[in-house]
Image (cartoon, rainbow, N blue to C red; front, top):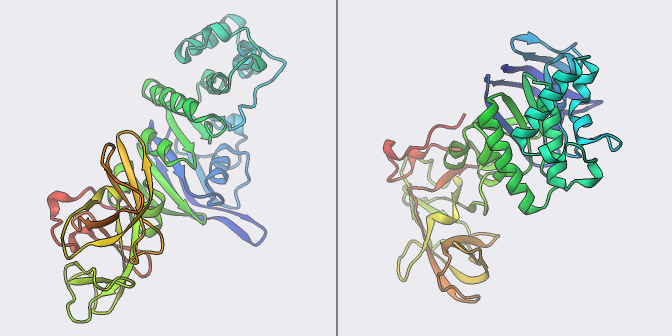
Length: 376
């Protein structure tokens, strides 16, 4: 195992900067995920740690030693790619033992290591098959097994499950979680799938435009996003955003821009009278009610029934996009039905015009006992 530290790390392609002076510390034995939209720099960052992408500026330190000038094979890392990258003319056994063969280990030791890893990954019966004889999930297990046999200090995963169908992704996600618990080796995982990141990671790095937006544990990101970008990226279904401003007459009231009749109580600490703000409310923090003044009103446009939960998309004038509310799976909700939705303002997020999230202790009713951690 080893720690990984990035100091002022940058990557540019000509005039285009894709990683901008980034600092990050990954602890020994930690499972860290990089998430963000396409083009945010997460895969480039992983390749710089691996040594297959040149560093424009800054340092990569592995186990305390600068690794910038080391080749990938000398960095003590193993990488699992999205495309499996198995040799088609080799059996599973030969693929998993190939790196050990290059290291000139004795055949008996190679066989022992390969068979031990195969047992851990439950692919022992597949050792004499060729990649073409395997399913996608089995190929990915082999690719992971090949990385494990090298006994690296750091595992690097570059979107390893994106080529699998939904059922296999769930199965392999469980396998990777089990593997991480068993090996306790430092793991860095790149994904565009927030479910993978939330369920696997000790901490998550949220990237946008080559810069870190927030580093935190999964539930800290969900409950205490540092800004609007993190709040909208983490969470499925997405958070509901309502633009508005602080009332000129009463600085404790938030007035939606497009639904001035639906006013919501905030503390006077939020901002100045007339200041533009945006309120974010998760689907589970809205409740259909029969009568209340502080509500969002509109017809149901779409109903998504997912078994344990049902999501209703409600068209309201308060937001350009439908407001999504989560209700019990067996709730009677019909398309076209008019709903009145009351937000739980104790759980709402308030964002300044810059996108920065205003601290939760500035929202009425949220005391210190309600806090879910501070954003990084």
